[in-house]
Amino acid sequence: MSFPGSNELLFLLQGLKWTLLLSALGFVGGGIFGLLVALARTSRIKALSRGTAAYISVFQGTPLLMQLFVVYYGIALLGFSVAAWVAVMIALTLHASAFLGEIWRGAIEAIPQGQSEAANALGLHYVSRMKDIVLPQALRISLPATVGFLVQLIKGTSLAAIVGFIELTRTGQIISNQTYRPLLVFGIVGAIYFAICWPLSLYGTRLENRLAMAAR
Image 1 (cartoon, rainbow, N blue to C red):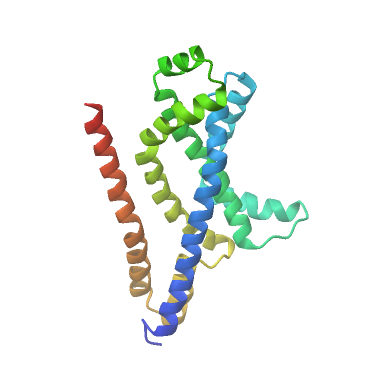
Image 2 (image 1 turned 180 degrees about the horizontal axis):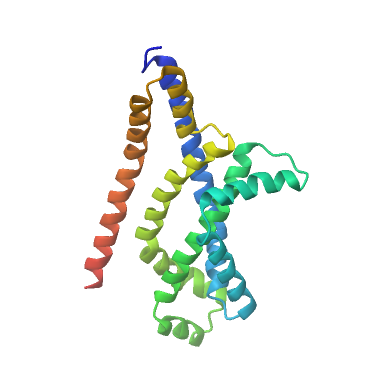
């Protein structure tokens, strides 16, 4: 079988679509829960702070592959039947929320304490203080690390192939088994990942350099 043919390329594009969709869903879901994790981690309530610290430690201290297995098979053991992509999305969301929560926790704590004290003196309540003063600055500080994590998350979606989900890497495996040209097939798959991740990495580096220059 010749490669690349139109059918194989369309199949790769289908896998790419799912890779991008999983990355987007995992990043958005992880961002929403990650913000809650960051706020709880910086809370003065010890139970919240310690609980989220343990949550972060678990997901940062275990491989994403194991997390995918636990979620995928754990949901089945609980008696629920969900599509593979749903299980993968849940695992990626949990994984991303731990890493983004820790990134944003560091950014929140990097804001000078005097700003929060000034906000308290002005009578601003917690929500206004975080929304209008702390979080906008923390978001700017954390952008390079956030973009860097997004790159890692995109590459991490390739592990979804282990639980049978057909994304970009899995489509490459299927086409390779059909064409017996693994070097060419995975060379193209790798080039697609590179075309997605390299511009994001450059963008993250530029943001980091810009922040460093602004801090001088």
